[in-house]
Length: 566
Ligand SMILES: *Cc1c(COP(=O)(O)O)cnc(C)c1O
Image 1 (spheres, rainbow, N blue to C red):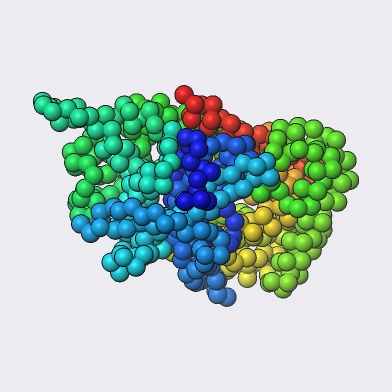
Image 2 (spheres, helix red, strand yellow):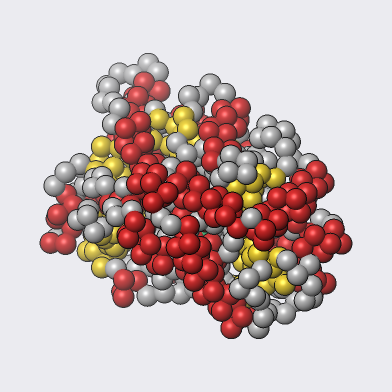
């Protein structure tokens, strides 16, 4: 087929991810993991890295978020039309699910870089007429349904994905699993490398795990035991029923449950966490494996507001494909940094006032908090002592919130409701808005337009976090708990401010809140209002020291030299 031919000329790195966030119009992502995958692919295209990505089509998306006046989240299917954005491919492969043959189709989207680099993404789709009605929906909803639904999706992604690449004619030199959702691909590879031995005295000898390992790279993103995808072997027996004998799966995926992380770890010869601290945490969780650290980054061009792009083009030409150039941020006059920031901030405040009627001010210190609404992120930590917050911040701060809770995350939904209650309690004394339907467009608007980016996760649950890196690309200062990437980017009072104790201390919510209030009162607010030059210096440090390093170009160069070419 013509349009795919150009991609078959040289061997590729196959990048597998359950979610990919390229832009708001393709709502096949839920949060940081998907956006990271999108940024990975964009940098691969910019850097001409030979890559093909594989994911699910999820044509009903994650969901569109409405919120009623009490803060109740309402979920609406986020249907989009693949025909307007992608090309259907004529290839078909099969997998077996509950002993039915399920056909998988594919759509092609090409990420094109101004450098001429092009990375194809294969979106797998079971919504085909040939399929049984109940199988057509397998690839509809990202993270929808129950365990069985998830396992079916992972069969399509991992096993179906490898078969599809083969069917199209790709030659693959590495398989990179972005989190455990795609680990079943290792089983398909085991089958492919099965040794042809006639008389076997030990059944396990026919399985050539070493050959599979040499082909596989595994990136873990989950710093807690409960976060890893696990399936009971009853479920596996009922649903998967083919590919590889169960005792072999147990050898690699765990005796009690099929643990997708363990499966990935056992069959990969390069394993990494997504920040240095996360590597340590993963190493403790999985002793006996060599785990490396490649700290995440964000795609600089995607996460820089148009007005800052123009400013960087003027003073730091070439920055987008060589973010190292940010090291010379000192060439940009301070007045222009501030003026550009104020232009971006006005756009955000106008948007907030138009959509919510909050009547926020351009000149008040504006704090942003937007990310998935889930309990470990502790969106309400800043409200631990509302009276104290009012004493410190009344009339001097305003707050912009956004974020979706997973449909089955009741605590996450309660968090949103609680912020709505606090909003009413604060009234006009501290203005607060909760913007609905957080997506990539809204993320850029908020991240670039606030003055201060707040992050208060419970340690060590923030494997990396990336939104603070996006903020820094726009000269926005981080105010964050020392966890994930911030441990590596933070210099107190220089690149931003920390909240709470040092990285290895367990989180104490009261102490964290106390520190947050102290610093807000004694450092953040006085610097913003009374020492504007010092504030702008910190904005420049954010650009020159954080954006300089925490970008996905640096990240991808490391994946190439440390994981892909070995
Ligand atoms: C960057 C991004 C995230 C990740 O934010 P964290 O604060 O790092 O968790 C989540 N959702 C969207 C839409 C994003 O753009």
